[in-house]
Image (tube, rainbow, N blue to C red; front, side, top):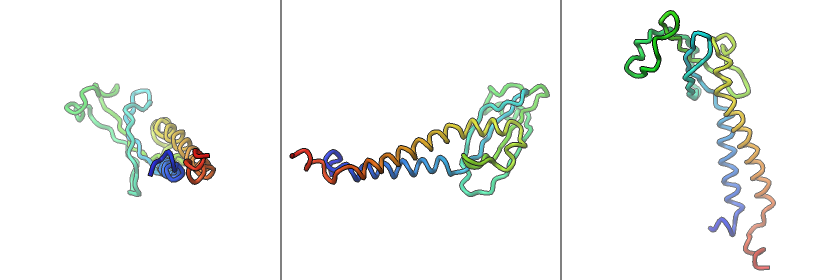
Length: 148
């Protein structure tokens, strides 16, 4: 099946894929893991997806020697020689996690993770809706138009 001669199913297929990925970006909850510097700002923010698992929010205080072999750039820790690590359930893009506001730098870390996914998810959903509209307006076969 040539996509240039019969584009309608191909446009629909791409629209379904864009809609599925856009909804995944918007509706799958995220867990953010980060470290907190002396000023309370998050750094080395990493994200995981919470696939229906019961997750707990954790704040851990660790000695910098814990990271000596795996990440020598962690330095000597904060002013007290300790490193604060946080694991936080951010919830969905449109909702906050249970303890997001109560955790050190929680809103800043979750915002850093969720803002690109919000923009990308909404963009993909809009693109997929536009694809469905275009697919509906396309003719059944383009070769019948080309022959006339």
